[in-house]
Length: 116
Image (cartoon, rainbow, N blue to C red; front, side, top):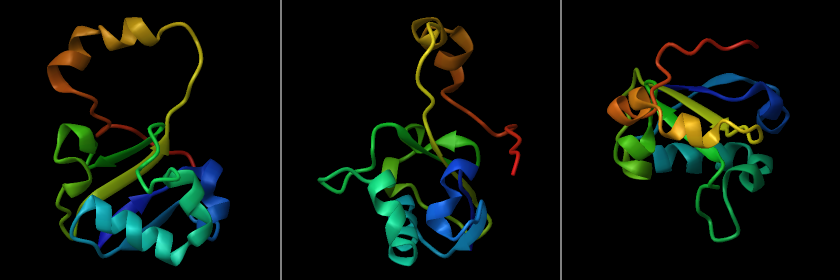
C-alpha cells in the first residue's frame, strides 16, 4: 500500500490523521479511495466538475504528478504520496518560476520534512 502524507491543517477531514496507507494502482484511484473513505475531504480536493482543484498538489516519491503522468501516474506498493494545498501570497512567485534549478528539474520535494 502507498503511504499517504496529508497536510496537518486538513487532518480534521481524514479522521485526524496525517499519514495513512491506501492500496491503489494510480494517483486517480488513490484520490477516489481517500474520498470514499473520508467523504468530508471531497470538497477540498475536487472542484464541482470532479477535477483535482488547481491549488491542490499531489507528489509521488517527491515528484509532482504533473511531471509524471498526471492522475494516471501508476503507484507501487512502497510509494510515498504527499497531498498538499498550495500556499498563496507574497511577491516572489515570478522569481521562483524563473529560477533555473526549477526549470531544470521540475518541482521535486524528495527532501521535504514534515512536522506533525
